[in-house]
Length: 191
Image (cartoon, one colour):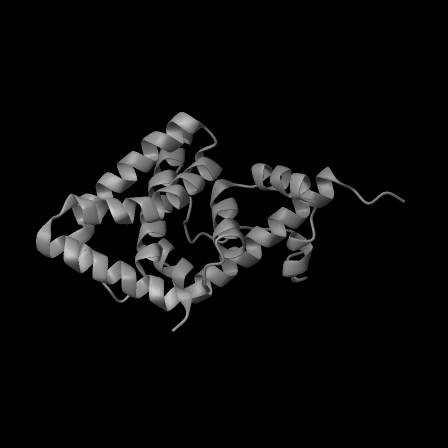
């Protein structure tokens, strides 16, 4: 059994024990296991420590209140990521008073015929990559972070965003394309 499968089993066992006993020590174990990851996700999306701290507390309150609704078909970590990303995106949406960031509207992008390979993003210098991610829309940034930083599978991202796998693949393709365009604009090739 790999560590991923072991963690999934440990989480499910812990959740079942907590739901049966309501022992706060058991929930605190889940909190300790995931709070750092949730905080890191919040800070990467929200950019402000106080917002990230508040969001993390609210997210764990949601997890605490809804733990009985956790469906064991998915990994607990995927469920936590889903709550985290959706909560942070809601905050950003409210801040910017924007519509649905993950809408299915097709965006018109010039020259998207050419596939942007993963290596193009992965070989960007770290500081340049950070700058590129700050310049693209938050939904594109979030999906790229899920795929490349969090190493989530397409089906996990689809579950988090409540989208089909093919829609997620297209969103990743568009996000990579936007990142590549921003990179070329910010860092033109020197001749």
